Amino acid sequence: MIIIHGDNQVESRHFLIEQIDQARTKDKEIIRFGDSKIDLEKLQQALETKSLLGREKLVIVENLFSKSPSKPVVDYLIKSQPENLIIWESKELTPSKLKQFKVNIKLFKLPPVIFKFLDAFLPGNNRQALKLLKKTINQASAENVFYMLARQVRFLIIAHQLGKQGLTGLHPFQQQKISFQAKKFKLSQLLTLHRKLLYIDWQQKTGQAPMDLTGQLDLLIASL
Image 1 (spheres, rainbow, N blue to C red):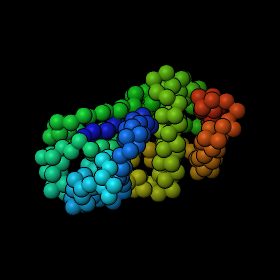
Image 2: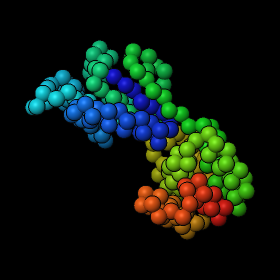
Image 3: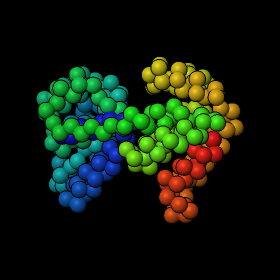
Image 4: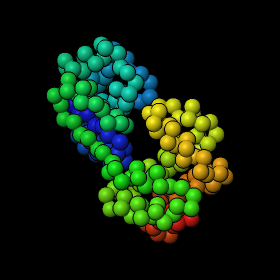
């Protein structure tokens, strides 16, 4: 059993994909549980029953603890700690949740400077934002920075239109901070930034980018 957690979702996803690829090379059946709240009977069936062809299974459960699993599900996992299970969490789990599991735990954390960079992402503040971008790129991959920036722009658009009430799932402090930051932008600026990020993403994925992702991020921040 492996528990993967932390706010560095890019790296934790890469690790999860590596585990799935390794399982496929061994001809294991992959079973995934995603957005819906997990049911104990379905989980037991996935973990304990043989496949029709007698293949071994690897079961992936995403954001199990974020969905407040039922006590029977938690008790079952603590007791059995199945070897063919991977739990992936998009956030860092508390020590109190982890201490019950004597399993392989992988933590993927973002460097603190990335949050300073996101806070500096403001109109007319491109010089400071560029300095922090350079520091961030030295400690995190450009893909990580791009993901977090795109996420921040989406949050800013939501906050601009709906206020902090639209930022469900975030800590109240984060809601307040993002709502304040959103007021510094015009909605048209945020929508333009969102379109530019989508275009950069398309260029990178299709091999049509005129430069590497770091260079494209530099140009984007310089245009603030």
